Image 1 (tube, helix red, strand yellow):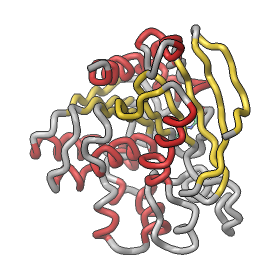
Image 2 (cartoon, rainbow, N blue to C red; image 1 turned 90 degrees about the vertical axis):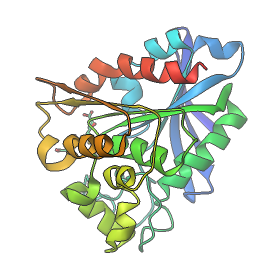
Image 3 (tube, helix red, strand yellow; image 1 turned 30 degrees about the vertical axis):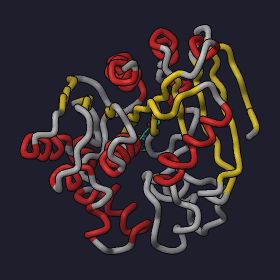
Image 4 (cartoon, rainbow, N blue to C red; image 1 turned 45 degrees about the vertical axis):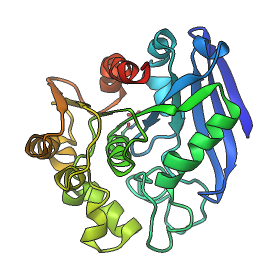
Length: 278
Ligand SMILES: N[C@@H](CCC(=O)N[C@@H](CS)C(=O)NCC(=O)O)C(=O)O
């Protein structure tokens, strides 16, 4: 593992690192914020999965979450949103597919199946790398994310029961099988099989009986992607029908971007800290 940048931040350290990923088959970058408490022993880990067009630096630079992580004694881990430099033709062409748009699943369709393996990377390989190199306790882990990363946080938690003690999302893509971003990604990465799509769709997973710790979801009502791409009401219906606890908060005036994320990030860290402290 190679450290690319390190910055003192709220008494802790914000770093950006690169390593050769066996899962992805290419170098991968990730960010780690270590709070001051990490100097005295391993701290719990909170993974943040970013959205389309973002990378491992976006949340660290824009969300202002480190001050809360420093207070609560939690490490923040921000993986990149896809493999990079794959050489796959057309992978740089669209902002909602290919590079910067991995959708946190393992692709099964060609030519993506070799490198687009973000689910295995985030859920399996990255925790091992963290455990080896940082003062963290990856057995105490929470996960959250924004937009495509909100979809990632919900589906990874639903698909890996017991792995994450806490889950939340900001403006998540709730029902990817039913919206254009999800159609495009699932067709490309998984092929045309609807059954396979449903195993990476938070609404479908909840409907089929998957359960996670009580969910916190925030959504801005001035978000231009709300009606066409995000569909929180579908998650609300599915959770209500299944008895999955969900707190869905709708906020007038907030759009999709990081000004919205920054406005509510303290509540998300508090939500996770409660579960991770135990
Ligand atoms: N590039 C897209 C927008 C992509 C977008 O909004 N990405 C969200 C995640 S889905 C984001 O967080 N962008 C980075 C930012 O706002 O700083 C567009 O032109 O409409």
